[in-house]
Every structure is written in C-alpha cells, then in structure tokens.
Image (tube, rainbow, N blue to C red; front, side, top):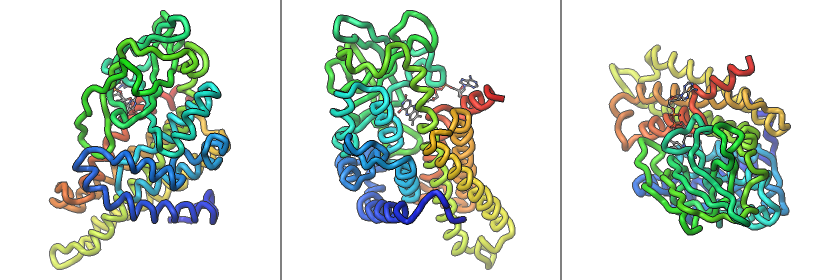
Length: 378
Ligand SMILES: Cc1cc2nc3c(=O)[nH]c(=O)nc-3n(C[C@H](O)[C@H](O)[C@H](O)COP(=O)(O)OP(=O)(O)OC[C@H]3O[C@@H](n4cnc5c(N)ncnc54)[C@H](O)[C@@H]3O)c2cc1C
C-alpha cells in the first residue's frame, strides 16, 4: 500500500494498540459471536476502556478530543480482523454525533460520557416497515402533550436494536407530508412503551444484531427533542457525510482484507501442477483488484481529510459510499471465485466476508439513492 500521508506516528501508535487489543479480545471471539448472533455486551465496555468508542468526542464529555482519523483507524482495524460485529459506525459516528450537535447540554452531559465508556450503546431508528429510502414517508408520530411528547410507531432493521441503551428516533411532529415535519428524539430504550420486536435473521453480519422496535405511547420529556421541532430532516442531511464515509472506510478495509487472505490462498492452493497464482487468470484478477484497492485508498484518504476539514459534501460522501461499497462486493465476489468450492463453505472466512459485504450497498442509503444524491448536483 502506498504510504498514507494523513496518518502520523501518533496515529500509528494508536493503530498498533487497537490491533493488539483486537488480536487478544476480538478475533478469538468471532466464531462464538457469529454462532450466538450477537457480540458480548461487555466487549463494548472493554472497547470504551481502550479509547475506541467516540474518539472524536470533546474531552469535557469524556472523549479524547481527536478528529475523525481516529474513528477511521478503529473502523479499518475492525474490518482487517474480518469481523463485522462491532458496529462502531452507528454508535460513534452517528448516535454520538447527533447527541453532541443537537441534544440539550443536560442530555450531552448525561449520555456522551456513557457512550464513550461503552456503558451506553446507541442505535438510530429511522427505517420503518413501509420505507427506508423514502424517509419523508415515515409514519411514527410524536404529539406534544404539555412537557412531554407521546411517540407511537414501529421501526425495523435497527442495528444494535437488541443491545442499545439509547436510541435516536425519527418521528413526525408536523401535520404535513414530507421533510418539514420530521423531528428527532433521544429515547432511553427502557422507557415504558419502548419494546423490542424480533431479532431479525440476516444473510450476513451475523454477530451484529438488527431488530424491530415498537413504540407505543412512549412519553418523552420535551428536552429530549434534538434541536428544534420539524428540523430532523435538515439535521439528517447535515450528519450524512460522516455516516456515509464511515461505511466507505469499513468497506475499503474489508475489501483489502478479503484480497489479503485470498492472496495467501492462491499462493498455496495447487491445480494442474501449479499454484493458482501461477495461472495468468489468477494473476490478472488479483492485479486488477490490487489496482482498484490502491486507487480506493487514495480516494478514501482524500475524503477522510476533507471530512476532518469539514469540507466533504453530501454528494462527495454519497459517491464514496457508493464506490467503496460496490468495490467491496466486487472484491469479495472475485475472491470467492478464486477459492473455488471452499469459497462457498461457511468454515472458510472468505464466504463470511462475501455475505457480510452485500448489505453495505443497501444500508445507510442504497447505491441507487447514492446515485440520486450525486446526480442532483450535476
Ligand atoms: C442489516 C441492516 C442494518 C440496518 N440498520 C439500520 C439502522 O440502524 N437504522 C435504520 O434506521 N435503518 C437501518 N437499516 C435500513 C436501511 O437503511 C434500509 O434498508 C435502506 O435505506 C433501504 O430502505 P428499504 O429497505 O426500505 O428499501 P426500499 O426503500 O423499499 O428500496 C427498495 C429498492 O428500491 C430502490 N429505490 C428506492 N427509492 C428509489 C429511488 N428514488 N430511485 C431509484 N431506486 C430507488 C432502492 O435502491 C432499492 O433497490 C438497516 C438495514 C439492514 C439490512
């Protein structure tokens, strides 16, 4: 890999520490967590102790006051382990950020130190059974009653749904259809009326939990409204660059990991008296992927620095999410092919990487929605 100029020696030390910690406490647990379809909740606390959660939160809220590069290192190192279980992107890059930017000071002081320590895990509840891409159509409502909002509705596909302690819930507060009537609320998951539905059976990413959530007459104090009423859609648009870039980072690093383990395999697997790598087709496939990965890292690094400088636009972040997640799927598919029949066996890591890859073109906004966003600025 070409040297990455966005990281200096201090980042290198942090990366080494994350890698050592994952080697000791994440990698050995991957098979069990995949089997149990959930990561141990205690692992979040361990990650908090190691400074892996929300590293870009200000120090007075318990964070280490770093910038997104530290978040990116944690995401990259997670993908390099081959695991998809720690859903740091949702927690650190989405929930903590909405809380920092739009919650009341009392809510920030309450939740952010707990999110940094791993005592509280965050979820974001946008998608509903009737629609995920078209968020303007959400049906969940929040009606003001004195000093509370009464929230009713149903959410689905919620990452961390089972383990979350706090959730950001999107609900309609205005009468109109469309974007100008959506508000966001910070809701404790143990509030009466907040109930878990099914833990959903997924194709891949087995060790991260995804659930249905039901909200029945959940009474939320008015100071748990994020920002101003009916401004939720505007806030979502503002937060999207970091959310989308964190998915792109995960995708690029996971693609690299799939490439790396496949390179090892094709060097030792033999057919017709040669290693697979000696076939011109294998070398050309791997060369093609290597070239795309090289370009991908350069692009990703430019996007990370643009985000750090607060210059990454919504369309640029959408392009990054689109391109890197499509690349991840292309790499994973080509690698499965090079593993032959073993590539389709669950006991081989590459099969899991292939299954885990697919959803990245769907969640956080589908590839088609990314193209819509990019094309609006043409
Ligand atoms: C594993 C997983 C985890 C998730 N985690 C979360 C979470 O934590 N929180 C959360 O809120 N949501 C989450 N989601 C939901 C996810 O964001 C949505 O599934 C996604 O946005 C797509 O919405 P949808 O499933 O309703 O598909 P639909 O919106 O019904 O889309 C179906 C198809 O139509 C296409 N389409 C829709 N609109 C257009 C258009 N305008 N132009 C062209 N094509 C279009 C889509 O691209 C797609 O191909 C998760 C989903 C999964 C699978």
